[in-house]
Amino acid sequence: QVLLAESGGGTVQAGGSLNLSCEYSLYSFTPYGLSMAWFRQAPGKEREGVAAIDSDGNTKYADAVKGRFTISQDNYKKILYLTMNKLNPDDTAMYYCAIPRGKPTPSLATILSESRTGFHYWGQGTQVTVSS
Image (cartoon, rainbow, N blue to C red):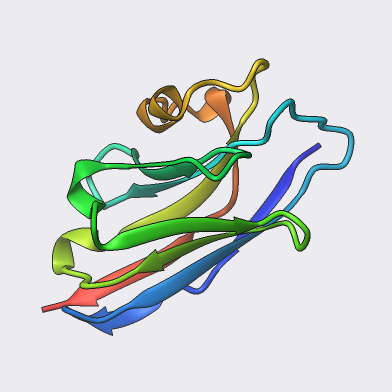
């Protein structure tokens, strides 16, 4: 069983910053090279991949957030982070952290492209609202 709990969302003005956290517990799930990702879903839109990171610290970002968002992890504390800078109203969405279910661990590109519910373990999400 995998449990994910996001926090850190809120309301911020355009140009501002937020730091999201995702605490995770793996229990009996033993990943071979743990990769994790952040997704977001805006009202009326499909869920989309934002950023992903693998066990070696390699990262991949969606074009819309490159240069503004940074994904990182603390493997000892079991926390995934998303630092978001220069936020704009288009970043308004529910943000979710995710761990892919499959083995072997998919590539970062695959992880970000797969938003199907059954492909990942998901958290409950944290709301980010950016006002103009």
